[in-house]
Image (tube, rainbow, N blue to C red; front, side, top):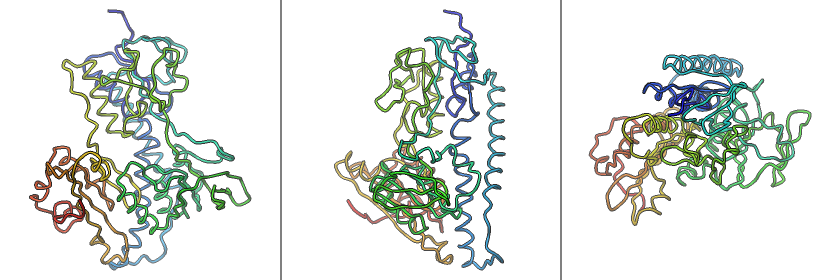
Length: 453
């Protein structure tokens, strides 16, 4: 066997890269990681973690208003200070960066600060030094992508939006994916006059249709200005801020524009094209179930491979990859069915399994059970926020193949339901489960009448 500096060289210290490095090192492999930006990747620095902290911040808006019906009076109007939230978030992320550094250190993984370039099938170059490895793992993740139009350089992307110098009183989001929808809710909740612009007829493509429509109505009720079937034609700097002209002729004046228009693999300058590593049509790295690219010594996982762009998916892939390449037995292929996910818009969305539309396409007959109700909390709060819960059942097997929720803490609720869906439990199993009263979650085990077939 050739004599390499390392058994595994990981490019990128995000969720997937760090987990793969630590797990491989635990098998006795010699491992190094190169990272040129920040430890913890998108999730810790400009993704799930700060996004959820900002979502918590935005929820206080509703909580203050809801408290009145329960007898609370707040002597003066609550005031929001953007700099406090932003700077407290920065401190928390520094703490998490430190934890990631210590995890790598404790696992005996060598951390190299610098952008690695693949220069051969078994060699990389970092900071001018050539390093060899039996296997090279590309875990560089994605990067926000902004379309080009007149004034597109005046937009900020989802990496930059957390750290704006001042709070945008008038905020506009371009996009229709979960990032766009979450930030529209967050800035609306923090008190900005918020607009969302999406060229399609409805946001959150790929989610259950009823969930999408329900979320649209609830967000609109909370004051988010939704503009569908239009796009930004141009942005110009004007005296008071930015003038945004839409393709339908409408003009809006705002203080900041977030382009949440998608993410692309962060492959520039990695040197993979010189080795002829194959890409899929969407520009992601093509890998087999062992996470090998078309060059077998070069592996890849996480967002860069174009699967579900979720931290727990990258973690699961990392464990699988290490079992394949450094373990003593071959694991079964990773199962991407029934991966639960949440969208932290307001109200939250939680979902697992198939949408109603996907189930109709896959099964001969389905039953749909749904409940759309005013949560108990709002009987006194005076809020007209509603909650949606929904089960999709394959009629032949009685198996629950999809569960969806829009409402408070939907992610927390769906995590438990996800175990049931993954375990292939039936509607009869749900019906036989005694509910916890009074909760919204009990609705999932008390829906008895079919909404539609």
